[in-house]
Image 1 (cartoon, rainbow, N blue to C red):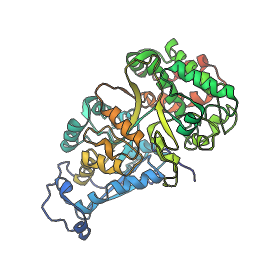
Image 2: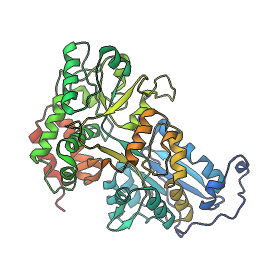
Image 3: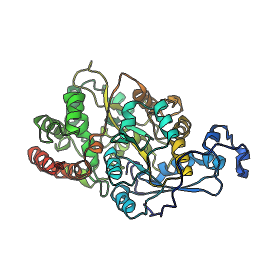
Image 4: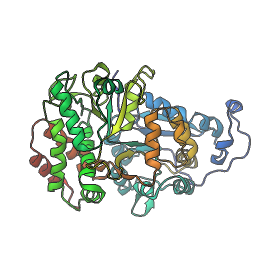
Length: 452
């Protein structure tokens, strides 16, 4: 089965007539007979809407889509709203076209602040209602709120989140061979070189293939190196183009990543030569670890889902389990914890009470705990109990996101203009890993940056 990342089938749906944004107060008993088996107390605040339907589209597919649908089952029962979800690996490419043609879903789960800004600039988005904003002010940091805000107008609350920069490995292999978790980037390099010298397999396995979005996993490597090598201030300058994309500091990050990704001694374990990074689907790229054909794989916290693609539990994610992960280390062991990450934002294309009721629920601590308890994902919602997460790693990830001492920076390519972050940067990673020089790559990406 081909797996698709939660970040990336869209069925066009015609939006219904617009109505007001104010949420309807609950009138007491719900008419849905199924509600007798559900505690509707947590859902009374959203009101009751008999016969109302809300359509949602996004990039979430397969097992994660099933769990998403399950996360609002009780909400549907108690409010009477039928929520219809369709996922698409082409969502990002299609949603603006659908919006312009009046065929957008009621809600689109957008995985990029840059895309959210583009949709807002097109005049297609409905500002968030007060209940949504109240939830964000209570449960999310100001930084997260700003990602859903354009020119002072608040359009969308955050939904799920992920931490980038995890390096997946086999705890059994590390114990048997005496490998230590690297505490610095130099120690990571030394470990990689040790595994390569032992000659049993290439240390790293990687895959950039993701349909029209092929290349995005490579951008995560560059972002992690930018943050660790140069710090949050330079990272921010890079993302906002206060320094050009071809700045020497960016070149340094590319070259550091290239010591692994472009090195035939380092990749592509269990898959092939360096060129196979482009053709190997990101969803399957880490699985050679399970067969002892590579030792290390760079991918976000959400990759937990892909170790058991059929939804089983034969591969456990734990420090003493089948697989686990450590964060890409800093330059110095005592550097403050800095992580990159991503998330999604449910934007509205139809002005209706039932649409805002759904969005208010999705921005709540109730939804966050319901969804995370189903497994495979996390959220930066401060009302989320980390202990409901499905693995030791995800508990750790939530605690990192909720820690005020963590330096968190959103995925850089998701913040950049679409012409760069979702186009030339992705394409540049493909060209670069297949032989193009660092300088030519970053010069080409820089030339693509919009003039205004």
